[in-house]
Image 1 (cartoon, rainbow, N blue to C red):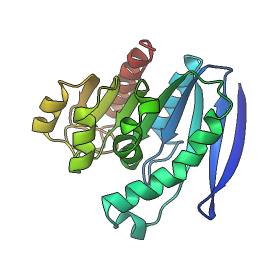
Image 2 (image 1 turned 60 degrees about the horizontal axis):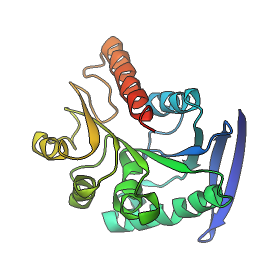
Image 3 (image 1 turned 90 degrees about the vertical axis):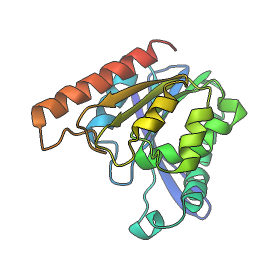
Length: 214
């Protein structure tokens, strides 16, 4: 395994990313949440699962302030896409990867739903969506109308959870996993440590199942 920390200049700023290489032809790009980064449990174990399956991983280290998060969804989406696209192009430019996976949590699901799912070059990519922001119509509609395979995980105590929306999404190609009594961090309320760990284990199990179809 080789771990390289890299950076790329884009739109007048520097975007850092970590490229973990296993010598694979499959690459998983990961997009963190606003305050849920790559050392948090979901990303830590999702990364471990990828490496266990001999899949290369890229962590993109963007960072946004509170003011940015209060702008419109269109502005947030455009800024994030402008930040991640140069990294994706940089990683894919030598043509060694034949398959791509995109995995995002919360904020990180915005560029997946609003851009990557709609691009022809990624029409066969697998999409992993942890706690997507389904209250935004454009994100819900994009996922609903997508033909991508993959996994969607959300807790039923998440403010973005809607049983009606989930019922509609059950007709998509995504496997849906609802975590009972889980909040937006997929922790079980109220501070239920043991069941939170069990829920995390279940999510990783579902992720492993999704990866087997690659």
